[in-house]
Image: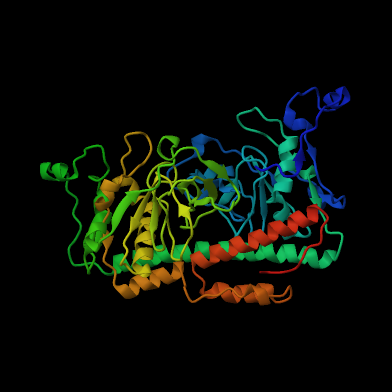
Length: 501
């Protein structure tokens, strides 16, 4: 966190210590710098005070089961990089139906975490009828300017306020309902239009995030349908491993002998057009740049771009939808290994194992780290590269890639020498292009300089209809920059320029 709105005082009075219940935590005495004195509190945006029914309920780990029709949303589903919930097997748990409590979760509801990742907020993208909230999440009964409130809670001005209120030091921090007393600055000039500007930007970002998930779902569906509907006549029959198979694989600590693994491998290898390995199509696989001091010397890191720094795309910032949530920046005088147009970056170890991104456009001065594998082919077309990346993404979602991974260290990993353990169905060029278009449409142009406050959402929606995941993410990042700049200007009581480019 940058703490751009907080100031450390040179001294504190004894009365201040008394007011803070005698705590000596330095974070409790930081001053919030907010030039704009025209503000509301979060609680002023609610139609009523928070009630017990607005808070989730803990069902207890005894009610967690392998499969169910009912689910429990953890605070991990609320992430800083997204306005929407991250609904995965890690963030949402199946529970015993008889432990389920109806919470009437509807599209447009705002959810905020009071514990653990305190202050994280999201808006529901659809109805969630069979889902309940953990006891650390409130559903906010917002009555007005929902998207304005959401935008400010997502911004550092809110996070830094709440961070100064909540004592540090505990393993899990608890905000209770302190977030209700955080200030939300309001515009002093042309208030109606500025509020609308903030709200339409926020709505547009949410629309793009929804469509990224829809495009991704369509990619997975297209891959699975093509596989299932175009099989040769051979039927799958499971057999226990023989000595020759053990010798070929060279490992016994693997799930590659399981029925689930062999059944999906049968789908790939039994595909009507056959299958291929990366090396057979001329792909090479290497590790990303080693960033250790012993290898490249001293480096300087930054969260914001600095002229001459490398743009750093690390796997911890790869999303489940093959986008880069954010870039960090690294200053180093050496000539580091750069990523080129069309190259595929595969997260090869750690919690993000199996996540993958591809760069379909020219990128300047961008590197990744040694935790990722760089898959490249200088003569392959971009559609083929995107197809390979999307199939790898599919293997993470159906967990097939985990069965190929090495797990001896307690975490999944894959070396460059294991890359040919992965088989790919030989989809026809037309099918690869169909999949690629859902990710990247080179014909799209975002003419935001001609957008107005009145027609912005309609024209942005027209663009979204044909945009792929890559374009949706790229333009969402642009709008987030505009949104954060607008909020910064409101906080600092500066003029907000209504402009979409």
